Amino acid sequence: MFVKICGLSEPEHVEVAVEAGADAIGLVMTASPRRVTPSRAAELAALAPSHVLTVGVFMGEPVEEVRQAAQAAGVGAVQLHGRHPHADFTALKDLGLTLVRAVAADADLRTGAFDEDLLIVDAPRAGAGEPWDWTAVRGRPSGNWLLAGGLDPGNVRQAIEAARPWGVDVSSGVEVARGVKDSALIRSFLRAARS
Image 1 (tube, rainbow, N blue to C red):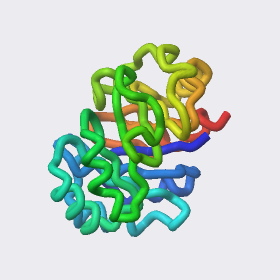
Image 2 (cartoon, helix red, strand yellow):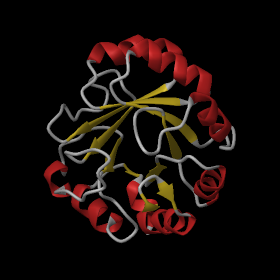
Image 3 (cartoon, rainbow, N blue to C red):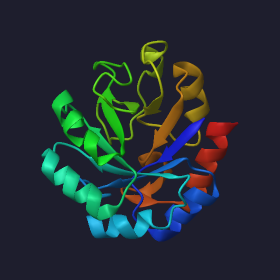
Image 4 (cartoon, helix red, strand yellow):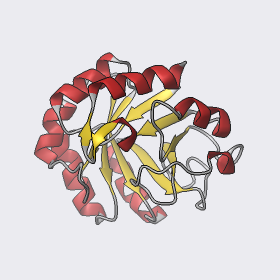
């Protein structure tokens, strides 16, 4: 089970996620309580070993802004969240980074349909931390896709059984307050996702 811990903003939480076995970490560079600057993202990304995918997360920014921020941060992947057109992914292809498309379940759920490498299927209200009907996507997404939205250490196993994803992505489910991660919750989530 591929596991991404998203919205990290403190070195200690990057280190905990890596030690606990996360496959990817998300660094949010868009409007959010978890937002980090490209220079802060670069500091955090530098703490992750090469086998952990560092993902710059964007939502609605123009492609040139995404390009500049991703390059300044030195991340290994760019995640475009929401209704980005196919052209945005095509325009970023030359960066040679892993491209991630994050959408709600009513979008095209074929991984690669927009030239992306990974697909994230998120809750109808992204970032709200609310569980949703994970069974609604079972058997629909194709390729390497991650389930997101309302996951936490207590329900991730149930969500995996309901949706059968290739991986999972968590942010608010490992927080003690909005935007404030918790080391114990990060460890618990990784254990539960892989059990």
